[in-house]
View 1 (cartoon, rainbow, N blue to C red):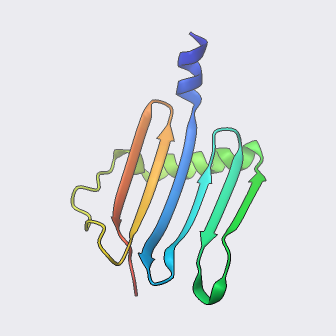
View 2 (tube, rainbow, N blue to C red):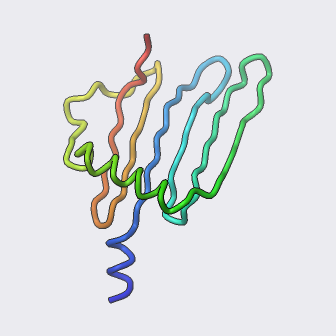
View 3 (cartoon, rainbow, N blue to C red):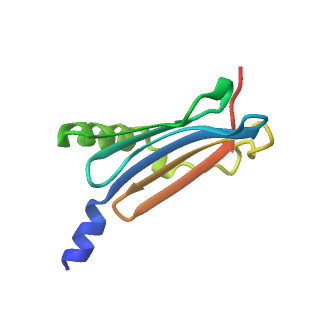
Length: 112
């Protein structure tokens, strides 16, 4: 029974945008983890830059607010079936786990 209630409470959000080009695999990613950690990574080799990784603990109130945003956005009921497929310009992904619901949407990287 405890395992089921833990699965019901699980919450995770990850956003990724990136591409592979002349500077290698360049990307930006952040995730809110079930343990209350916010992780951030930014990888670019442009002008010799190094990968940046940061991790912080966020308060339960921050996690509650992210959950509220996800819930009110209705993203868990959406589909990426009609979104443009990732291509050689890049891709972006949004992954959300909320309780027993899981969604992974991906599409091509949006450029100006």
